[in-house]
Amino acid sequence: MTHPVMRWCLREKGVVLAGPDPKRLVDPVTPPALRAGVRATNGHSPGHGLEPIDNLFYQSFWVGLFCRMLHSLHTGAVASKRRARPGRRDADPQWRG
Image (cartoon, rainbow, N blue to C red; front, side):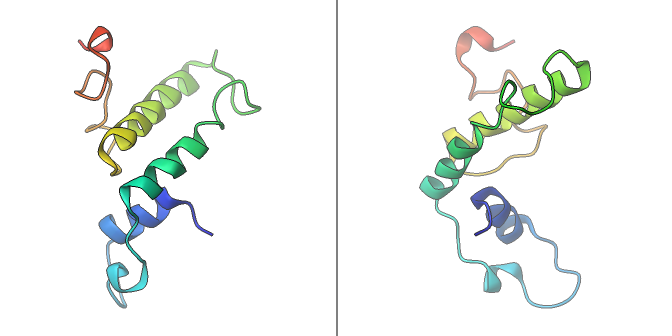
């Protein structure tokens, strides 16, 4: 089965080049299902056999990814990197600014 985040993106943000609208092919992904998928993905983080956190490229990648995950947990939707950037309303006040 496809990950809920991928299904949500295909259905809600998919661009049709040819053929039917993705909303006709992909069932809606509920906010609880999306949140469950994000929580399951959280186990695949630095220290779990993936890219090292001491690499500068991967540091920015992980920060951006976790900001997007936090946004999805709060809203039940997937956001762009820009919209979910650090310091947005989803972050604890101590981390803003």
